[in-house]
Image (cartoon, rainbow, N blue to C red; front, side):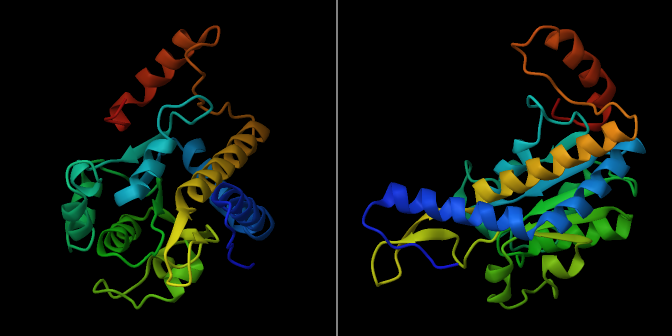
Length: 250
């Protein structure tokens, strides 16, 4: 798939995104099914699905949290120091610091019946890698959402492994090294990142497939309804009461 260069930035970006979402649809179906099976099994067994990412990837952890059409059994792993709003520079340093990931994960007290989805475009930084290693030590199923092309071009970091080496299932967001899709000039300056759109696309595909699998097994998926829909208040209140003890962000 060729990279996009075009003087009309909006059209170039939208076409590049559409091309890569199509590549995800066509190339990741088997991995999506494996991830969905793990999610469905975890929820059927009373487990949780935890979502984690640092930097901009933390938005994908929040993507699955308390939203219309989303699972009540999905919990984001959030640490403000690993986001960008307090200090982008400090966040960047912390995601390369040993010991941070396992400490953040421990707050949620996950168990072996749970699933952890980690979003990391490069898949090499210390925090995502060590978090995956800790999750595997607990016995959790780990699903990684990365750019395989990006990860392949970056050396293994101080953690001694890449996220794709640890995960049980790897979902490729079909991004390029550096993430941005649209070239502005021959000097290498680019705009139009993909990873957030592609990550949300993959996550929601996995969750939709998992919901259908649960339904086929005669298990009603614990799904939130939009607050503006009839009956939503009572329906959502029941789910919040059921999952509040396992999701500190409800």
